[in-house]
Image 1 (tube, helix red, strand yellow):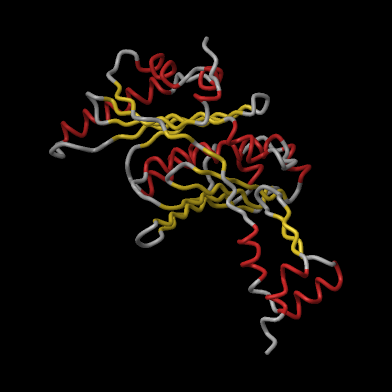
Image 2: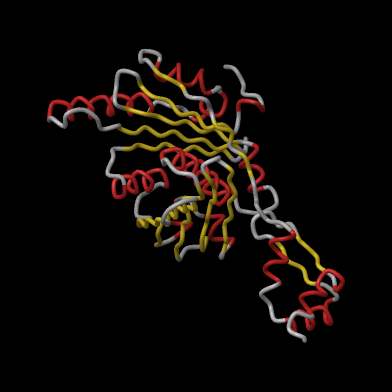
Length: 298
């Protein structure tokens, strides 16, 4: 079984089945996922769910015809207060989890045990046009099934999702199959399209975790669909990008009253800001903050 190398991981592949009204996606992540979790001491269960959420967000983003940002957040009353993955149409991703009760999170064996009763909130902000938000309850047994439910509610297009995570390999992956409605809308046409969709889902359902983590995309797709005609598009590279910067921190400090800035500097000698996502700390000293201190003085 051929092993993947760095050049073939962290890729999102999209493909069409030539003789059927069905599309598919495959995402395989390692370095970008490792970058999200490396500075955090998350329990294994939290790392795995965050990885699944990252893979699912990549798949979801690729189904949308938009340029802009997307945030997928899980919120609930469980030992994980919230979990969020932010990305864009160029597959630049970052993610975070807020663990409220570490011991309970470590012992959790299911989505509900981690998040509790809660919702999945999907926010899409196009570069142009209005933002859109969709909310579905996290009332399905797995995150993959919650995403399937989201597609049922929002797009009302038959969609199936598979998600995989491996803590030892520190890899995550996912696959999506979606029906593409077309034709004259006749019952006969609809029945054939549904039959095609069901057939591809049955084939995709045979994916094994060790295959999706070790086979390159082309080899895996051949194993799954060698009897079908598949058109594979140019893959997209998935990258970790936090987005924090010194300038963004300074912009936040600029919103603080100058008297409060002076008080913090007097007490601590500096103002420190730590990014929640990558845990990078930015330190600012009096010299750098002179303009903020004098902003209210005339």
